Structures are given as C-alpha cells and as structure tokens.
Image 1 (spheres, one colour):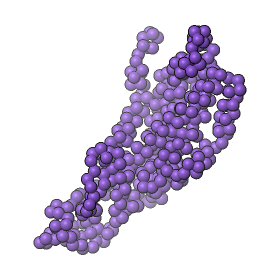
Image 2 (cartoon, one colour):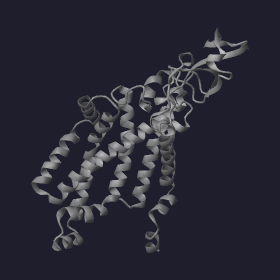
Image 3 (cartoon, one colour):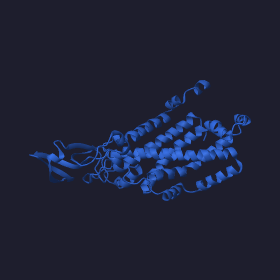
Image 4 (cartoon, one colour):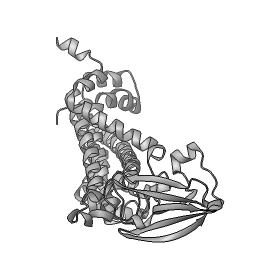
Length: 357
C-alpha cells in the first residue's frame, strides 16, 4: 500500500490535497490577472491612471455616462504593447448627466458633483456622432477618480513580480552560500555563518529600509532590497540539510568515484533537499508580498502612479471610518488572499513531500 501511494505522481498529490489545491487555484487566477491585466481591465491606460477628478471617491457600483473627446496626435497602441505597458488614452473623458443634439452641436450637462451640473456645448464635428460611453465603477473610484477595480487587478502584477524576483534572489544567495558552508565546513562554514548571523541579527524592516535608501526608491530597487533581506533563512536551512546529507553513503561513493565537489553538490545533494527549499520558497513569497505592501504604504516602496496594493491602502485608508470602507478594504483583502494562498501551498507542499519542520 505504501509503495502504491509513493508512486502517485506529484501533481496528483497536489490535486488531492485540499489546501494545496485551494492555494494553486487562487494563485492561478492571480497569475492570469497579472499576465492579462491590461487586456481585461476597464481602464487599460498606463498604470490604470485615468483620472476624472469629478468622480473622486465614488462608492462601488457607481455608474455614469462619459463624453469622449478625441485627443489629437495620439498614436494607436498595438495589442502586444498594450499588454506590457497599457493603452495610451486617445480620448479625454468628461462625466455627463444628460445631453441633446442641437444642429451641429452637442449640449451636455457636465457632472460636477452630486446635484451640481454645468451646461457645456461641443461641436459634433469634434466629438463625433456617438461620443457617449456608459461606465460602471464596480469597486468605486479613489480620491483621484481612478477605477479601483482596474488598479486592483493591475496591482497583482506588482505583487507577483516582487515575490518572484525577491524569492529568486534569496534562493540564489541562500542555496549558494548554504551549500558551500554545509559541504566544506571549517573556516568557510564559520565565515558564512558569521555573515548570516550578522544579517539575521538586524531587524528585517530596518535592513530593507537601509538597502532601499542605498539603492533608491523605485520598482526594481524594492524587489532587490526585499530579496537581499530574505536569503539568510534559506542559507541556514540549506546548510543544515547539506550537513546531514554529505555524510550519507551515496555521497561517499561519489567522492570515491572522483566526482568534483561542484558536481556532487549540484547533481547529488541539492536534488535530494529541494523539498524543504520549495516549502520555504512559498513562505518567503508570501512574506515578500506583505513586505512590499508595507514599504509602499510607508512611501519607500513602489512609487505613484504605479498601482501597488500597499500604495492603494495608503491612499484610501482614511475611508475605513467613513461610509465607503470598500476603497481601503479591497486592496487589503487582495493582499490577504494572495498571502493565504501561498501559505496554503507551502503547507500542502510540506505535507506532500513529508518535510519535517
């Protein structure tokens, strides 16, 4: 019975584990949003940064008609460019409550605020014969009149990016230094562990602040800063695993056959300790997302107008105590769901791979 159970493919074990399956499902949806964001969001402008000041801080489900006024000399955006950087707005959008056509002109009531409008006249030759667009803001708008849903979906790309880059850096440094320390031991091990302990003794947030100030504020800098602060726990874990594995008989046999140290580490040791590494990577992915959100909330992470969930919390947290808490709750729930999914995946991998912690 045990042999039959052990012969079950890894992907089937994941599908049979409720927690891992739930985590994978949420992460798959998030990955789709990250990859296709600009193609599916209501506001595909770069960074979903279309500001309509008159529509600032509107509640979820707010619906209004927008008058599209063409902006001259704006080149069209192809589909691939839109998917990467967004679609350049070819129109200026003005909210209106009513309109009528009088000869060669459109007479509209421009929306200023609740119960306040202003009559404005536009030439039909300028705006066209059908220049109106009904728009619904399903999650409302922020104080600048930007669509919350669009920025929320696009923020998934930032969270996925910070997790991927930070975990890659932490695994690269942690596996490399941990393997060397654990395999060679002696003075090399002592030097590496001294460095690990020095970095480990520093408060994580303070370390990230220092690295961020050194590298500067920005999209890529915060990813590197988070990655450089997360490698120590990987190095400690890998060192311990390598110390236990290097004394096994098959490693002794590899040495007897004259294999190089690098081949023994890469081909024989690392493949057999990847289970704990993947579990730790999933945990670090969740930690990186929370850390990026915190840094952006404090103003030293991702900078405006790029949509980051932490930055959205900073811009809208005052609305929690008003009648429009959804403006702040939406990015908070998104962070919670993504972190929860990675924790579920990590716990599932631990159970499936029988990793002892």
